[in-house]
Length: 144
Image (cartoon, rainbow, N blue to C red; front, top):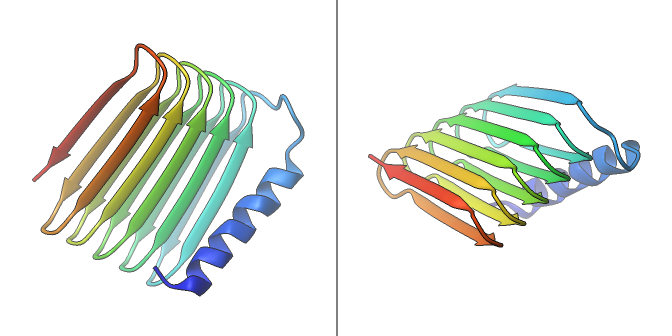
């Protein structure tokens, strides 16, 4: 990943995070990008939130963070060498990443109990990394 892309993603995530007040609930964010070498960063705090990201093109990066319970994140990427980083803290959260194109990276980190993560990758040279801390968690990874 390019350093500029990483800095841009983190800046966006921090900006969105500062704009949200604690205990925000039942919010929805949908982000859509088309093109190459772009970055998306999004943060939600509170419960029952929905976050969806769609990126079309190669070399794109998505960084999503949710802190709370019963949150849902879905990331869809089409193109080569895309990266998706998803972080969730809390209980009963769901995070799904789908990548179509070679050389994709899906990185998931969930902390809490009763969380679920799913990664679907179609293409050569894909990497999926999932870390779950807590009890009663489920992960499914499909690479084709």
